[in-house]
Length: 223
Image (cartoon, rainbow, N blue to C red; front, side):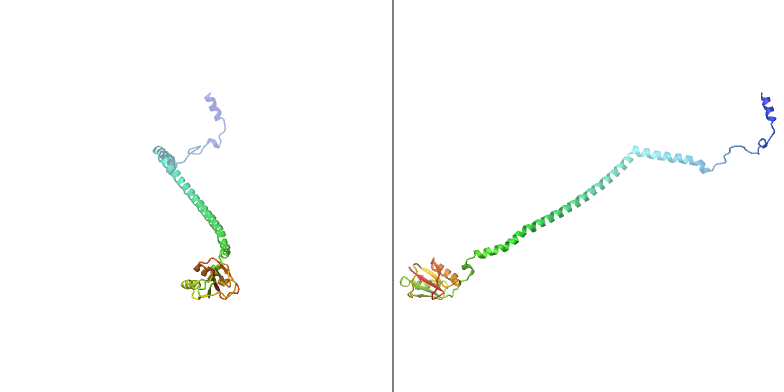
């Protein structure tokens, strides 16, 4: 059988493929450089080192510490932001409260200030004519003895002079009608305060305005 195949191969005419060139024929790889040959080993070494570091971090707790530090930093940052927000809110609340208090104080003070002018007329209206006038210690005062008692008018004059009324004199009735009780007469409103002071000094209760009297103040003694 082998012989038959050999004869068949030899029976074909030879061509260019039956005379190959010298040297290797087919796929051929040239010589590789040292770097190319060492690259796989370097990759393996780096991967092994990374795996060792990862293994050491997990079992030594370093990785957990790193995560805890990160969480602590994040918590502190969040606390600072909350504090700043709270402080800003407190400042705004304080400003709003101060503004409200100022407004309330101004509103509450307005009625008091506006009430002051209204009190002035009341004070002036409540004041009596005696308080709005002054006592004239030099006014002419005539003391009339209406009931005829000896020395009664002179005694009253002494009392008035001792009180500071230096222009008081004792007189007799001039024939005009006499009052029914002891009284202090005065000519006009300007003499009212003086007449009231004379009545207080002599202990006389009745003070009246009288037209046609000879002096600004006339004291008529009827008892």
